[in-house]
Picture 1 (cartoon, rainbow, N blue to C red):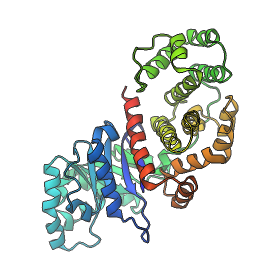
Picture 2: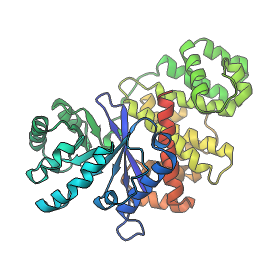
Picture 3: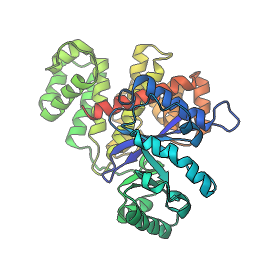
Picture 4: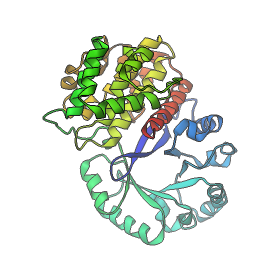
Length: 400
């Protein structure tokens, strides 16, 4: 089963995702077969269609690299993460070198763990585009030594991974690392905002008017008071892949073409871009992926109207981070459709289980993932395919 974790730059904006397997040793899947599943998806649909313009880091095994599974994959945006051998016999390091060199010659980027800086792996070091520093096993003084050594002996970019605290992030940032990865970024410390920004307040007002089925004139009045909000809403509607024959140029036209329920969805999306000051951009990106993934999975067994509701729940699951207040307080600001509050605050009902599932795609909580998938009767293939499509859709939206 494929899970993901975002890779951020120094502005805490998402620049790529690592896709990794969450296989059980006793299950039918192996690490190698999960990697093959990713390769197969990329080759069938095309890398850009599935993952957009961002880099995709694929957690590999040496066995998966030796097969022919990469022949049809466009290497442009794919970074192959090469594991250490577990032991450092020089002849085995040398034996793997032709395969790794061949992949890089074909255009794949290669990432290695920090063990590639050991003398035994010296033949691999010139092939490294990225070197990952695992903060769960390295002490701060070791990190400093490795960064210094890598800077003198390699052109590779460094990625500090398994960041769990703000202190770890500050430490590696101060040492010059510019790429970061870890669960801390998906749930950073809540930045309390005393008041909503004017634009956030306008979006909340817009959402409540749409939800209460106010007249088009009432809703237009809100947009007239915030030209930036009106512009961004129109831009979002026109660029979000709705397949509209003509460009939407007014809110009245949007209501006629889409209906209020669809507009509630796009207005919810606007909140992901209007974060409280200090909230990392990755929070909004995570919310978009969650919304789209919940929608795609809901489409497998729920009617279209319920799939729209699933989308909104995924977006609103990050409301506390986006608005800078506890989730219960943020939810209380909005007139929510039935079932949304229970899903967001208590993880109850079918939407609560869907939300648990998509959140587990970002973490190592395998038991929650397995329980939710089984309860919803969703297969590995359905979840994996929807997950990759959601990443691509979110990236397309971010670059539109």
